[in-house]
Length: 120
Image (cartoon, rainbow, N blue to C red; front, side, top):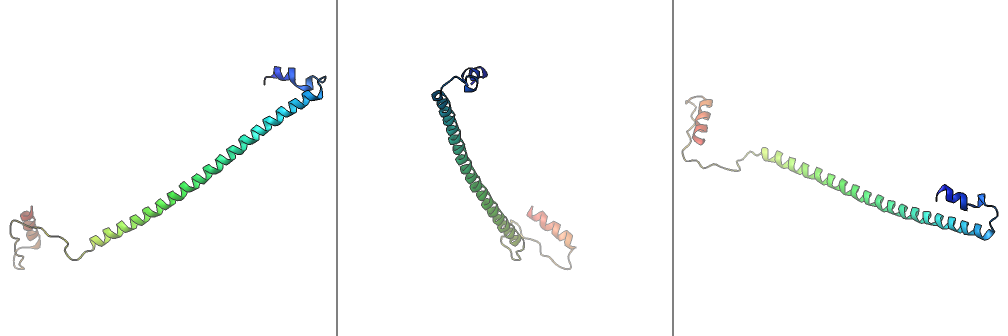
């Protein structure tokens, strides 16, 4: 309502009105208050639902985080165990025979270079 409308209709500015008209205004005000209260209750219910959903999402995030930590630890353990193997787990088939390593032969570095040349 506009200020002009309130000045024309409000009982404060027109004391000559009867009680039935005042009751009508009171009923209108009560209806408006009821509507506001219903709207407020509806919004409160929606907020409670949203809070419940937020908690569920947070719990899912925490579960995912715990699962990622477990996965990380398993992968790191597997990598560590794979690097600590003392027996061969694979072999290479070569087209040429490897050189026999002899103590009286040349130094170990030269032998390594010759072996690498054969492989490559």
